[in-house]
Length: 167
Figure 1: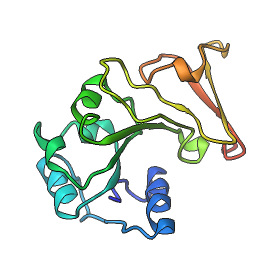
Figure 2 (figure 1 turned 180 degrees about the vertical axis):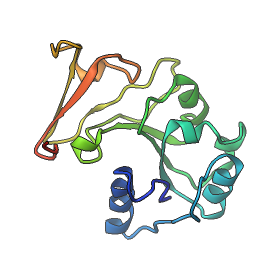
Figure 3 (figure 1 turned 90 degrees about the vertical axis):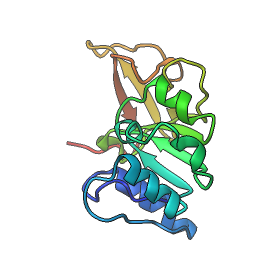
């Protein structure tokens, strides 16, 4: 697992929890921005099998990269909306999952099934077990169910769980 997120970002908790309790290796790269060809080199040289990347970072990888990372099994995107173009580029080569979770949800609120390159905006997924998620409009009225809402939806997403932080 690549420790891409800085420790001050809640996604770093997911990286730790995906690696260490399962006996996996957590690769901590050198400090500073890790993007483009340098990110591809780290993924390849360290034989990273799982990583969580924001779509903006994923988009910086050189065009031919998806087919050159044989060790990368699962690619999780999160922290911002992921476009269909990135899914089309990466999903055919790797198990790609979209995660959504504001800090108030204690890292992750929804998790998608493996994404497919069908041309549409990727779904944000379904709520994690023992949690819920609501999509509300600007007047806080229910909008379509989460399972039918994609990451490009202008509505507001509200996690509901005992893990949700309080003010």
